[in-house]
Length: 387
Image 1 (cartoon, one colour):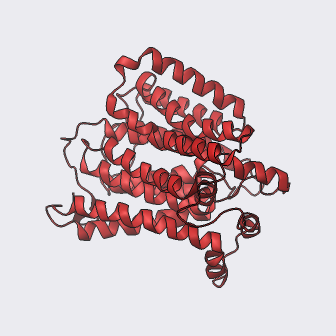
Image 2: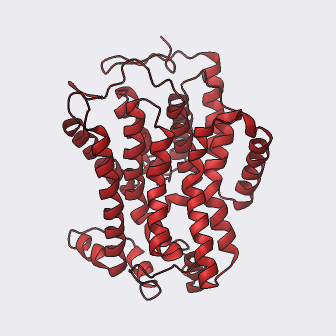
């Protein structure tokens, strides 16, 4: 039995036997995790430049459907520049935010199209490689227990992926890595995602005849709820509510207060321009908060009411169309991981974390390019099969 290429049921035990190419790719993903976990804007510019060069060179061989992976980043940049032109704001962070918005998807498309070996199980190999890196990272902590890491976000996505695919051994491994990474919002996102999956299990019907309707309602309600949560954050209501239950925002609420007079929550708000929030934070000069710690609020202020709505909707449009011809599990993962991402976006900065978006985009590309007529296209939560 091969650890990374064979299917495993719930009661099977993982045997530590690897194929040679699996080991090679585990090491390569380990090195990739190491590279993208370190800071350095120049590095991302170079990586994206190389990716763009090869993608242009091989543009005739790129699968057309894979281009959808670029849509959220392009939407952010497009409406961001419109806000810049209207507001008249331009700065270094205008360029930086624009590059970071598209860098992960461009690099993921290049790696998937031109670098990765499609004979391996990419998702499993990537989890092992990133996991090895994270354990080496955790061991650097003096107490050798938990050490906060933004890689918690991608491990949360792995939990969702392997849960939907009934790969319980990898679910447990992902949970372990997520817990060690010590990010509260990642755990909350996973909890919301699991609740949605359970809801889908019981609402889709035996023949999953209501699947399309459920997805449509989910998308509409998620967009509305995202607007509402951003509104409550802007108005301070969300902070007040959670504070009553003893939730500590670690100073985020004080940071958000600086922007309440700089944005209006109405249809006519056109945004302050891409990069405005980060430039303002530099002027404020709080070294503890050089980022707003809410991608939703940041995007709303930068893009405006309409641009914000177009951006959050682009995730559903892109990922659903990316997996349109894929297995049903792929569609469920695409919808669920957007919900999970928006939960993270509420109080963190995952939009610019390449160690979240690069592996997640690779997962989405991988599942969208599999044969849609795969066997066992079902989601089993214990004895409950729905797809």
